[in-house]
Length: 240
Image 1: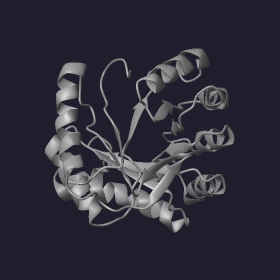
Image 2 (image 1 turned 90 degrees about the vertical axis):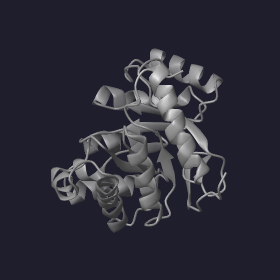
Image 3 (image 1 turned 45 degrees about the horizontal axis):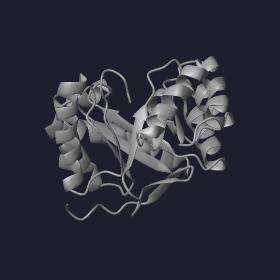
Image 4 (image 1 turned 135 degrees about the vertical axis):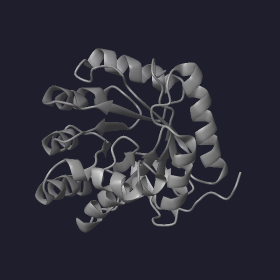
């Protein structure tokens, strides 16, 4: 393995990400988060096979309220996946989540981003930001001629800068394409610009057979180049 990229350390509860910490393995539940029993059952199954950080979708208030009970019954850090509604991010923080996955650019005004950043800062909660090939802004797609590595990096940096402007730096960055070569190029390019830890993986990798091969090729390529601090294999099917 190449020398690992030097990054700052970001803590997901007691789980360190970045620096000299071992590369952690993440997963994401495919249960309805408001169904506490089913979600906790799946998380415990994931814990048993070595999952170290778990993410759940928070699309509504019921899901946000369920986080508190879920958190009480699991051992690994809990990440809330938030899209568009900053109030859900604030509710997730109030309910004891260990980290957020948001894109500051899609939760509204500067004031809303400031509120979320302040809540996370006050509770020592990190934020994972980034971009994937399907979420790049239209003007960047036009500028770069499609979902290129450079377009992904510029899109992600917009979100990073929004948080930095609010004096927030507990940041983890992800850059995921369904194309392995684009993903690798994006992380290599971003590594020259920031020292935040990287969450790595291949997005929309597919079914367990095809997706496992594709993810293994992409993730292994990144790791052998010293890139990656936490990883998730994204497959269609049972996360366990």
